[in-house]
Length: 226
Ligand SMILES: *Cc1c(COP(=O)(O)O)cnc(C)c1O
Image 1 (cartoon, protein in one colour):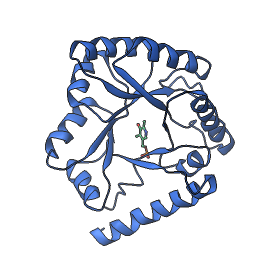
Image 2 (cartoon, helix red, strand yellow):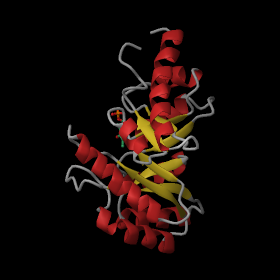
Image 3 (tube, protein in one colour):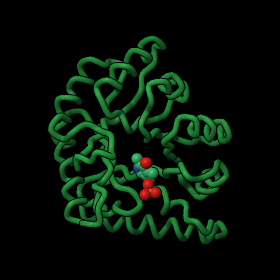
Image 4 (cartoon, helix red, strand yellow):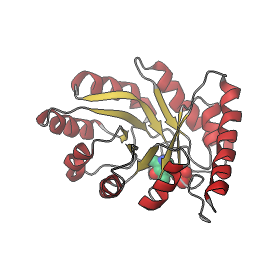
């Protein structure tokens, strides 16, 4: 794919986002985070040159390596993976624009301590395991409001901006939709939040129709024939 073909490909994705977004409201804005976890720094630079600014990684070491390789570009980095306790300091140092996968009170407490030590703050999303899947991290929907309130009240260096969720892992559209609706319902009950991050390459239109305003797109943003 040359640059023109790549631009056309991304335009088709943007058209699909537009169609889904308009169904919600003309005023509904959706932000794309391009998930570059299976791609190289060169691939990120290529997508940057056709207009993409926000990128997401799910391993701290990959985030740090890509930040270093691309430091001359004004990129916005998101961290979207599970965070091991021994990587907390490295993540604080990497200073992502948004840590999307804060998934427990224990992690929040550990992160809070390290942030306070370094006099830093971090914008975060609370990850919700909306379909109760054992293979996924995140707080159970029943505990989400309470967990959110706990972090707000006890972790002053963590700025909670909203919620993140991965759609149910199934081909059944009704179940995927139900998982998005569960997350959106929680989002609507929270105060002072602005981000509802849900939707990936296989389900972003449905996620947007369910209220998502941030989608995390990997494979469709980095087609193999690149
Ligand atoms: C990998 C990943 C994505 C992107 O997945 P695609 O299906 O390739 O779009 C989005 N969110 C999270 C949390 C991921 O780990």
